[in-house]
Image (cartoon, rainbow, N blue to C red; front, top):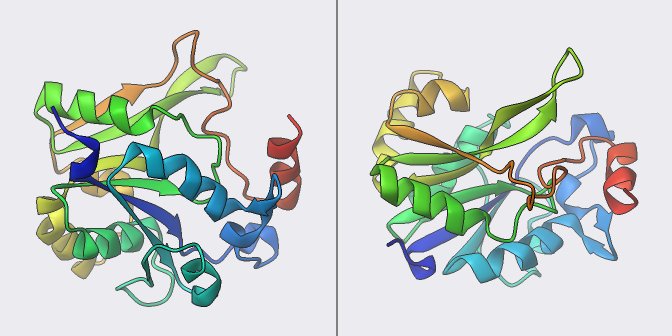
Length: 207
């Protein structure tokens, strides 16, 4: 069994927020507090430690009381830059990633990812959740920014990004990965809904 104290949680808050008018998404108000802080409070009980990946307003993030690290890659290189930053700073055998803009992610997210990783002896466990397909029918799709990774994958990711790789799926495909569906009747179908725009954020607050 993978224990919570063996897992470091990484909150990804390093994006440009371009679809939110350039606003720092993690600092936008959600239920009376910055969205990244809400995410932190939801993640902390599930892991042994938490770090935040942010590229601006570092003081604001540091006020949440956990370590904050900017991208180790330049020019807002995307979520994989955050993954690499987290792996370089991770002091536990495992790292789990969650974005700052999906505050209602499952309270048993890490437990279920860890169970699947352990059961399959995989390198990566990735969440999957129901979405509405183009034909209006529900489909279960991977949620690649919700990943549990073995910390030993750092060298692999460093090499992938050195060669210009930026897509999460292209990198995870190089390793033994398991998809973990969150689609049971007890699962909230909107648990993985994220806020890319101000109106989406409002919808998350008032479903």
